Image (cartoon, rainbow, N blue to C red; front, side):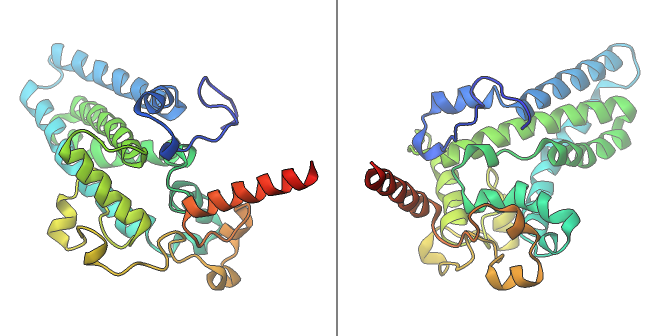
Length: 270
């Protein structure tokens, strides 16, 4: 980010050390979330204006919103499994930086709030492409805007619950606890399953769901997504963009060791 707003200073924020109130304060001050709210309000307001002025019937517009609601989990499952966990993005200098920002950084440091949110320049166009054509087919431009508003609101909900899954506390509701458990398994045990994050239905349908550590062996690439020193010899773009690379170990342990080393160095210097 080139500017700082409220909570978002140069300080690092790690969800495993934060509470729900801290998360909520950070969430509503994050520039991408603010942008999503603006897009949802504007597109929703224009769509409502269109309905009130007979530019489109109510039922097709509602159908476009309902269709988006069901299409959204499919799109994000496909993107997460086949794009973000693919191996082609790190190979090109044109896409390596984007892949690093939107997924590699998150897996190498899963509780770092600053790299947990999706990038605005990738997320918003994706939501538009996933929702607006469906809405347009059902209700013209009014349906397209209504679908966009629906998709953006879903993105806001998705981002908030994704953050909750990384908080260092046990959620009160069982269904949120289950989401957290399965998503933590994706980050700290085996990244080849549980792609749905907030909706695991498609994982269950397509055979990528697993209930816990006993169901699958621990993955050696869970923290680096397969981008290791050997790969970097041929495709160095991500390594060049990543300070203190490589990241192959548990980030919680790594940060604890780094903090201990820094304290030891400070003590010896003093």
